[in-house]
Amino acid sequence: LMMLLLYDYINLSQRVGSIPFFSWRDVVNMMNHTITLDYTETVDISPDIKLTFYNAGHILGSALAHLNIESARHNVLYTGDFRFRDTKLLDKAVRKFPRVETLIMECTYCGESDVLPSLPEAEETLFSIIRGAAERGGKVLIPALAVGRAQEIMLSLVDGFERGALPDIPVYLDGMIYDSTAIHSAYPDYLSNYVRESVFKRDRDPFTEPHFNFVSSDERPDVTKGGPAVIIAPSGMLTGGPSVDYLKLLAPNEENSIVLVSYQAEGTLGRKLRDGVRELRLQDEEGYITIKVRADVRVIEGFSAHADKVQLLSYLSTMEPRPHRVFLVHGEEEKMREFGPLASKSASIRTVSPQIGETFKLA
Image 1: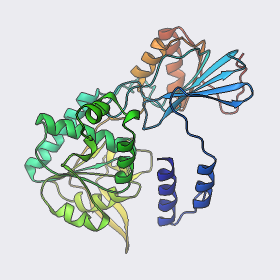
Image 2: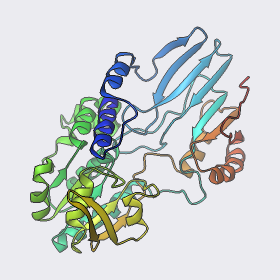
Image 3: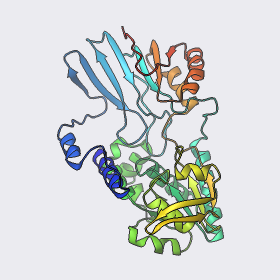
Image 4: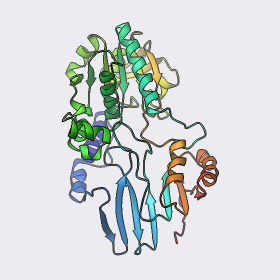
């Protein structure tokens, strides 16, 4: 999965005329020096530091990093990106550890209004949009991250088809989603209980459901000319890749829907759509073209792979053992300043929002 993402970055950089920060040779060299660890497996990374990974619930293989320093004199847990709720794709992040004195926790969604809808709510919203588009004879384009978000949506659609909540229409998958999904299928032990039960008890890989059709770039015009369908394609922010090609073909038709299920960064095409811009200037093979967006544009928040404010507070309150101190990182400065006192009061833990370059003594 790591090689797939790095190679994709190099290819994308070359396609848009940018110079990548590293080469193919650098990736191969890095992989030759990479050691893989199972969850809960402990390894010495220096004479006085032991490292253990635990499931982070973010994407396939994501890990919380637990550092045991100087024979347990001090223990640090760094969450990295994590999610603290079960989904159809992944089990939620682990919350029990041998010892933790210091926690370094991501706070991407720690703001007062950063409360995501539940997964069932998000799914029902998506199903309703798909049903509406199908009734109009239109298609639904879902720009999605090829790793994690696409597979999450696929599993939700499987459930929708099984329950009769969705019409019997094809789902087309494009771009890197094929390779990424194949990797997910190869590692069911690292996926959710929902997937493991399907694979091991029912002998069925949910990623190979008959509704799913992987397509190539040559087939895109045919896909957009056909009947009602769902199309899942990267990139999630519409910064490039097949999702932009589909946008050009589908956006002018008011029968279609475009569903944004990923974070949309400032300056991206996806952000412009989210903010209500309905006339887009896009680069084509022959230069720039202007697209008028008549399709219905919708935003669904509940599929995020990050913990929201409620999950962050729940994680702090239920961690075993409770850390003595929490460093809040990977969030907007103002939001973290507001979240710190709330977290301290809710979980009775001292919180710190460090500045870049600031140094702290752990013990």
